[in-house]
Image (cartoon, rainbow, N blue to C red):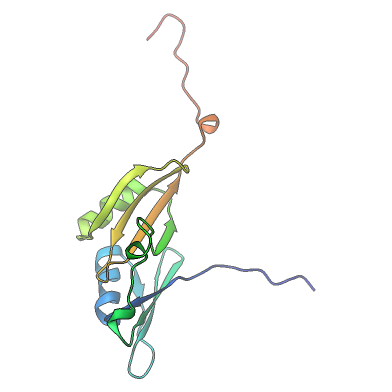
Length: 144
């Protein structure tokens, strides 16, 4: 019997208001959701482009602690993307709060970050080709 394999992951964020947070991710970042869970409702699963993000309303708002408040420049969630510049433009057009970027990072990604309603930093990164993977067009002799 073949071993079981992991197929994907879904980060979970604690939020102050699950309804407001879900609507923010829908309206500003293009995520969708199918409803809320719990009694009273306090949990939501968002999805976009095959990626998922879960939101759980904290019982006490003081438990909502963005990572950057504990460790500088640390995001809460990192999504890999195919085109960081295009996605950043989309988010700007939707009215999202861009926290930084887009910029090239020393670890080989072009990335940007947004900040959500609860202050969570969410980063989006595109893997850049390594220098030896970039093909250059050689000029023809005698022409520039």
